[in-house]
Length: 114
Length: 112
Image (cartoon, rainbow over all chains, first blue to last red; front, side, top):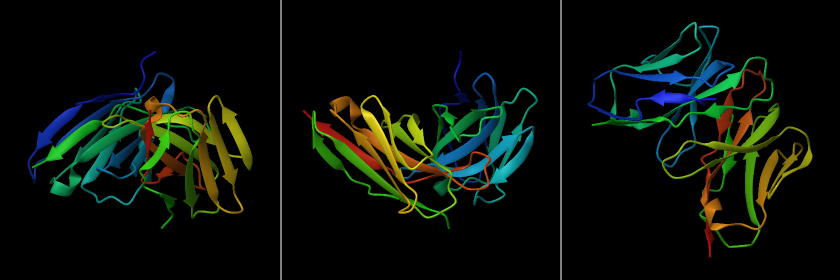
């Protein structure tokens, strides 16, 4: 049973560029959340997708956008990259109907903006 | 701003000792609380969660919750060098949807 998978694992971009990160949730999971973790900080909630719609959003600018596909996989897009966007981007999934709040994290995509 | 606060550490304990990690939260409506372990360069791994006042034990780990004091703790008994990692405390906010607010983490170092 594959867990949460993310791609790419590492990438380097320059300021002003755009990036797309991808996530496949754990089998049986239908909700995908994205978090940003800067060095030395805890993960910060970006947004959550359920039934192909953004259900909740954290305090991130509109440069951060996402999408969820019918197979529950998801993408995170960041436009006009800034140096401060350098971080580990974590995707987390949770199963249908689960009410405990438990999240299962992927290994993350480490983005470096130069 | 709803927050979760943790001491950044490092917390240094000898092998075999009890490590005590603490966390406070500001949202009184928070429903459940999570402890994740994160090794350097890796993603967070769930250790355990708690939603009722009192203690919850799982092997060498015990989570404690005091909602009146808005305080959560994690005890690690018989600490091992492999327990050396950053421990993240997270709260699930009122309003549901599995949105977790994380603390900045406490770095634990277990020395032989």
